[in-house]
Amino acid sequence: MIRFSAFCFCVPLLMPALHAADASVLANKAPLFAQSWPLDAVDAPIQVHGGRPKVVPGAHGKSLVLDGKSVIELKDTATLNGENGFTFSVWLNPHVLDAGQQLIAAKNRYSLKERQWSLAVEEGGILRAYLQQDKWHPITAKPLLQAGHWHHVALTVSATQAVLYLNGQPVGETPLSKPLPATQAPITLGGVRDGDRLTQQLHGAVDDARYISRVLTAAEIAKTYKPVTATQEVPKPIAPSETPLWDATAKLPKAAEAPVLDGVVFHVIQPHAPEKDGYIWLHGVGLGWHKGRLYASFGHNKGEENTPGEQARGRVSSDGGQTWADTFTIGAGESDDHAVSHGVFLSHEGALWAFHGSFFGHHLTDIDSSKVHTRAYRLNESTGKWESQGTVIEGGFWPLQEPVKMTDGNWIMSGISVGHGHHAAVAISQGADFTKWDLVVIPAAEGLNMWGESTVIVDGANITNIARYGAKPQALISVSKDYGRTWSTTAPSNLPMATSKPSAGMLSTGQRYLVCTTTADSGGRRTPLTIAVSKPGSSVLSQVFIIRPSVFPQGPGDVADNASLSYPCATEHEGKLYIGYSNGGGRRGNHNSAELAVIPLQSLRVK
Image (tube, rainbow, N blue to C red):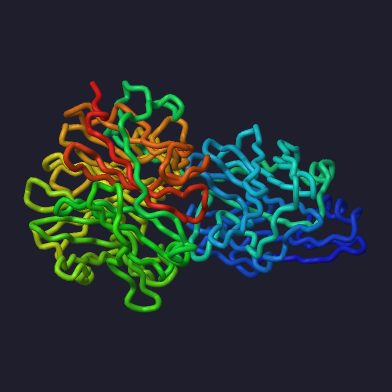
């Protein structure tokens, strides 16, 4: 049974969940309000989203172990905004230190523009706090966290400064120019619950969380800390793939070292203009050439991401992307809880097809309730309308790359199978019948927690699948030698890659390419937008070019020093590579514009 306490201290009182030393500290300061969550069972007053934590021995009694899929919500904490300052503390035992940014605790709901504070485990075991002051103000601890070991983490926030503590000692601070913004977001442990979307989840254990409506002094925090020598077993590292993606003899450049491509021309496909069209969310650009015209599609929503308001919309250009006709709708939900979102094109034998991800409700990652599937549409060029061909692929498949014809006569379309591990997946056509596809879900290494948005490179019967890891900034790789029917186990590659959907392929020059963000120091940041290429005929990438940085005053398009350039797609046409991508413009919640980069193939030549 979870022990939960909520007291207003006007005289010295002993809070049942506090230790004697803690109680003596609090007894000397009154009045104050305090809450304690021992976290020794899955019971009220907490709510777990996305799974069920394991109960194991902890720092004090029992603890809850999270596996990167769950978030704990501390009930009735939405009003805890610390108007007079506060102290939040929790015991942490991190199990994985290389899974990207993992939140220990937070009071945020990004889609509702509610951001107040966060405590995070960063790549490599760095402890960092974030405080909202129009933008995030970080505090970084120099001592690194140790996997499997218990650490006491505390954050104090006053009107003028925030201080981060590790194991009873201050490890950093930041001045505050104004109070943190009040939010109605509950305090969460192990990640953020943003609507029905879980993000930045923790791999590790949490124990004994506390919120006190007063700024404890350094002496008080030091007095409450006592080392815990017990350890926890941590997962074994996932073995990297034996198949290289990057040439191990070539230096992978940092973002500041990578050359910027010459001769690139940029255009805006769809601006972010909710004041004109009412749409605030856009993502997942798709491109396709058909009868000399360039078609672009994207997911569009007047509400937020992964909600039933999403529609598949697009535009067409008759001059290679310089100008665009009015926006049209390819597909929309057929009921109030049904959505059709971003997808891909295929032009074949005079017909233009579109394949789009579709889902129900708000629980996208729950395969049973969301029923993610692929719907097909075909353009009626007499009427200009898109005609639905119905559901053509089920099993959670969301298409993310235009179908590529293989030498066996079938087409292969890469994507993700949402649910049951969120593995990378491909769909293989039955010849030229694009209403019938065979779904192949690619196996993953044991313990691999992935969000397998994927792309393929086709080289005869040999197919290379490159997938997003999830929260970790590393490309995943799998290989098929039989036209995509069977695959090696998806495993980490030797190439860092931002936490975004990639786009890859084979150029007519015989060069492989990968569009995403792949530099030595970008981490999970979705900037700059890069393209990695191979030498002609080589199976490994060896050169990285910058397509576009975030700060791009020459335009066109959105410009911001923290602009996210993500979810690219690419298609080759008449000696040029056309790349569509989302530009966040410094906005959050994927409130993107859609942009286009046109690259002459000669700019991508390497020796």
